[in-house]
Length: 388
Image (cartoon, rainbow, N blue to C red; front, side, top):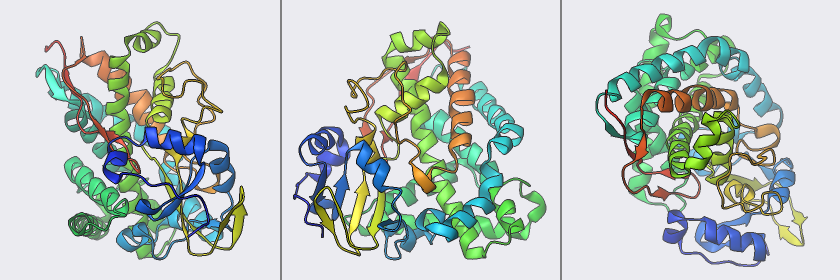
């Protein structure tokens, strides 16, 4: 391991709420070796912004990493030309133009159907009954796996993200991840056998037209599901909770002095849905007097970066008027999230405005607990409204 100062954590407490520990690390030991995670953590925003781009030192190519072993080597776990060639080949499925011309209308149709079903009920769990379903419906068209249900998308996504964050090696968690990837492969097989049913601009069809190898296509579709389901799900439900819990902030949107996009950007800074990015040291290097050797594991802690007081005043406060341009919500450098345009459209143009417009008198109806550090979101968000 690196010769960084050692910092011990309680894994259970860190899973429940990583932010107190991350704040201490950022202030006291910004580059620290955490034995319980088997990695050296970077927690300051500027260090992460700079070092994440040094792919010759901190490589995304991790042959023995959890994501590669469990899901196949996707474009996120490649660097240089191999990463860029796959990114270009799949870009048509995620480009701002495709999002505008194809996906946004599909997002609206799905949201309207879900909300019309919910409206007469008067109460729901925003995670399970709205955000999960809408994120899943969006992924069905974006990936091209229209044979999958939204519930299957969510179950597979959760299985995979639990698997790739399973640094303690829990056997049941790994088994659920294998079951999830097997189900996705079965649906890919089904859609490949019925190409007329596959959306023309979906990731499957786009990748096939680019003549990517089949194992690459499968790995990249799993990547899209692992990130494209849980993160929008958690941000949709989490941002709604944040606005309902901070009525002064919601009032700014309703008065036209702030936007739904402002709320999305601030929530994702405040409670980062992706808390970290793992890297492997490719060659010996020294950063801030800490020496790294090849083969070591490094975590760039986006959740800490997004609360760095050097860039965000009172970082623990939810404030949709704040400048969030320094946040690393979608990463930085060559691995900047390919699905950023789709996420912004789904969340800030569709999910949030349609939710608050359709469900009159929407309010929180119970306790909301958040979990996770590699991926973080609410377990449930109980709400009620005036049924009609």
